[in-house]
Length: 181
Image (cartoon, rainbow, N blue to C red; front, side, top):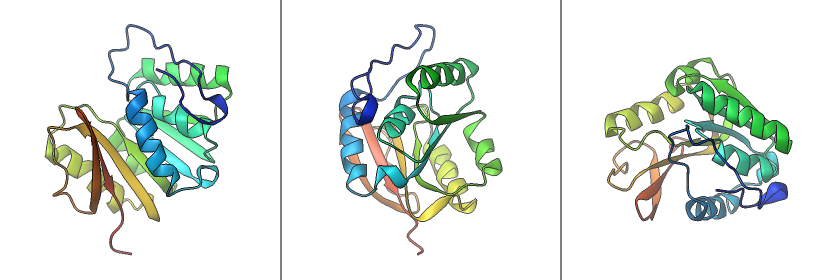
């Protein structure tokens, strides 16, 4: 696993073996960032990375010049890894150790991009609750986007504000926007 683009492109991310996670593959990451860079100027975006895990997505946004990146995960080992890697690589990432749902109650920023990579065993009702909470708490800017990475076995197209999906083998990215603008 490595950072694909930006000023830290090519740097390897060597995660500890005791972190049992499923990081976004380089191929999927490259595809999703190609889509996002057509919609956003990364130098101006404020990003929230929910279920951050290794920090893989956060590093990519920071490397590409994101104005602010906040990574949230409830695993202390993940938060410590993100903090250590970010410091070594001089990446501008703020971490919060918290459950993703609870963190949405306390955040008082608005985000251009909210990326979430919850466990693949999530049920549709949990995805729906997460997306609803984001919109109810009004933390997504009017022209912002939510990107949910999930198993291709799940179909999130029935959830409110769904706009499109992209499938890459076992991984699907579903996109949500505020359609009530």
